[in-house]
Amino acid sequence: MAQSTVLLIGENTFPFHTFDEMAPYIEAALGDGILLDTTTNRDVLSELSEYDLLIDYLTDSTLKPAQQESLLEFVKHGGGYLGIHCAADITSTSDGDGGIKKRDEPIPEFRDLLGGHFLDHPEQSPFRVLIVDDHPITDGVDDIEVFDEPYCVDYDESSIHILARMDHPDLDAYPVVWIRSYGEGSVCYASLGHTQEAFEHEHYRRLLQNAVQWLT
Image (cartoon, rainbow, N blue to C red; front, side, top):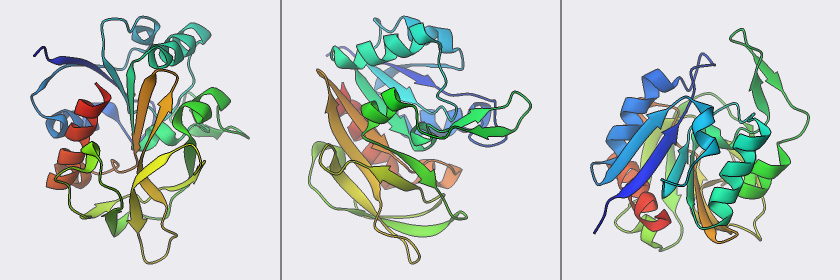
């Protein structure tokens, strides 16, 4: 069977979620069963026809109109989309000088794609992630004890299928992993991924690898 072709995109604009630092850990977590390209060049998003799956590790989701349209059409027509951690932060933008600007509202097209978006987070801390549904993505995945950045999210419970929830002493049971359909394509979002420790966790690796298989 032919290997899936996957594009992983990130950026080095912010002092956190730095792609040069985090991409090696993401690549290692995804394993060897795929043909993976990594890039910080957003122009690649204008032509996605050679890929089966886009993995998004962008914090600033500001795209040129042609890039955004191409991404959305790619998923609508059957492509896969895996958003990791900062991909749900669709209100933060770069000020071009290493700082952050905030939109008043999330980018509506990406809010529609994801079915939810990042609101805020407390300090990084240890917490548990509870698997709450049997699914090919959670096959062989146990509850996860992890040190990471716990994301508080707004989400449309009627339009997403939640696979894992947060078990944090000071937070609600926010979704950590969910899936949804978008046109003919499939979307998965997983909020872990600020720390090296998250990507090195055996069961998070298994979950991400399962997600790639399911999405492709």
